[in-house]
Length: 45
Image 1 (cartoon, rainbow, N blue to C red):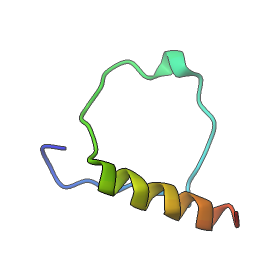
Image 2: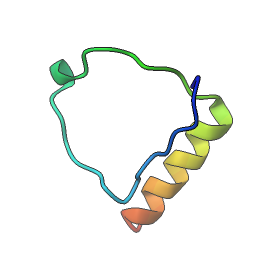
Image 3: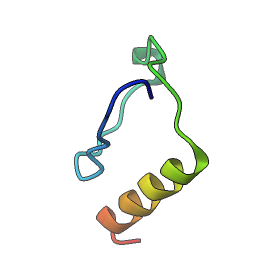
């Protein structure tokens, strides 16, 4: 990401993929793993 960003993993909701219009950036594998862990924790998995 070109600017500081936050993933609000406690605010998960379903969205139709067609609503995702513009790609705003990419995540490193490390940050993606951290987000996945936070989502699993939020969903008590």
